[in-house]
Length: 314
Ligand code: DON
Image 1 (cartoon, protein in one colour):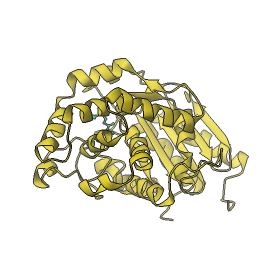
Image 2 (cartoon, protein in one colour):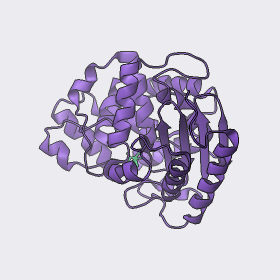
Image 3 (cartoon, protein in one colour):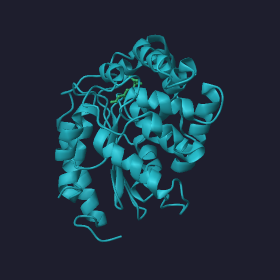
């Protein structure tokens, strides 16, 4: 790995401290997601920044061991697991373009005859869920959990059943999206697809575990800790490129300017970012901006990107 400015241990620590302080100063500016009632019970004071380099260093500030549900961040990992276990045939049923709309938008789905714009908006992720190996939603999610536990080298990743039930009871918009895709033949079994999707969104990890399990994405598909190949290079590039263009929905342009990294957010307040060949960063703070992205998480990533010159567009 080439030496980068600020990437000495002391440089990383200093950048982390400053980013954490900047994120802390923005606490109170956002709002908890309440449309999934269980997410409205999160503690808004929680804040975590966890940094993991491909050469094996790990550093964190704040509540890095606080569990939270991955929500839309799970979409990156289900896509990886699906590509790895069933191949890429299903990609022909969706596009690879940013939507410019909210994650649960239905307008384009209608305009484009049930074809999702990309795998990170809800419709694309529901399609991917159905592709996961296993018959029942439970079997499919057990496979994903096994994959994530191996990547994180931890058994402390599970499904938060309260969050799952909370979304299953209220997620009628996602059900509508799944039924609409069934109407167009994009999914076969909309009930299985959407139930699997609800379960995957409720997968619970911590910022520390999320940062660890993302490392292969920064290292051309190879887990730098174990040396094991997780994904072929082409699939890895696809996943990371789509994070850069579609990972924060209709806020991806601002994220590209301010942070300049591939990233993926979730409505629980997590964001995972990948600096190719250098590091992964996982942040958590549950208060969101109007686009559904963590306010303090964005502040921390913006500061880290500046301090460590991480932007791919420099
Ligand atoms: O489908 C939903 O609405 C949630 N389970 C996940 C959405 C989400 O995380 C969007 N990201 N910012």
